[in-house]
Length: 216
Ligand code: DX5
Ligand code: ZN
Image (cartoon, rainbow, N blue to C red):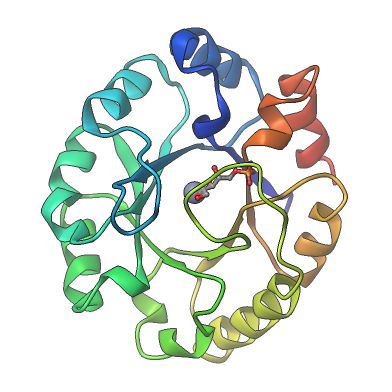
């Protein structure tokens, strides 16, 4: 199966959000990745529900919403109403992850769980069947444009083993520092979805860059 690509709108020109979304509509992107940062879970603030709604209004692509917030349970319904197709919560932010995932499912969205670089994939053993997409952070969340953490390759392989051993259909997403240099090995190790922010939006031709990532 060809790799799926989820460009991160965090790296877009926010003053021209509509045309950036329209550019993604014309591209081969599979999702638009939407990074929500609350300034507490991560040391940065991005944007919230009204901006997500505005992106959704113009988007022909499903929204993959990555919640980098404490107490994500408080906002699951609001982000679903704002157009999220996938809602991803951080394992580190959820004391009752099973309940959070049940809520996401009951709202009709796909369930996502994101792990920080230091969080072992073994913590997902008893919940993997309930997760549609596990997102492995390959940078410390909070900022675009950071350097890819090499340990991610092995982490993908361990996660793939865990998914197969449980007979689950969970997909593996990788988020942070993805580019055309590391993408082939990420795919080889078992990644299904690649998030790419600055590599796409800072390129001369983002539509072509997305096509190049799809073609690895
Ligand atoms: C980081 C975000 C990422 C980020 C990726 O906190 O979760 O989605 O936007 O951006 P790049 O591809 O520039 O690392
Ligand atoms: Zn993200």
